[in-house]
Image (cartoon, rainbow, N blue to C red; front, side, top):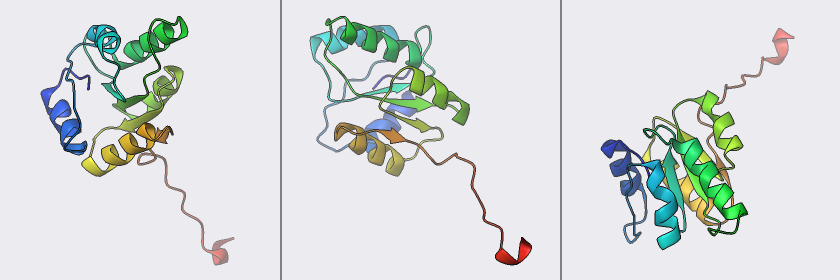
Length: 136
């Protein structure tokens, strides 16, 4: 779990299975060494981390993986707004959630990515409201 905000780290940890072993990092630059030392099953990365943000951290993991220096690590990115989905896709994250976060969506997203799938937060998509048939 990578975030420089203790409240975000606490919320994410509370959403994970009680038996999950979590390594907390507060700098994106520390992720590569942590993954090299002990690859996690899932990296949850906050987009807004000082100096080396979530996108740069995820891209760094993907570049190191492509160069054969690190194994593949699935990434769940925590985004600040709906427009940031573009960044999550560009960084090749397997999943993303748009803040504000809640425990149920975090659990659902982590489970989907851990199962080898993807997760795209749809909570902030525009709602389509069909017109009544008499209005057309």
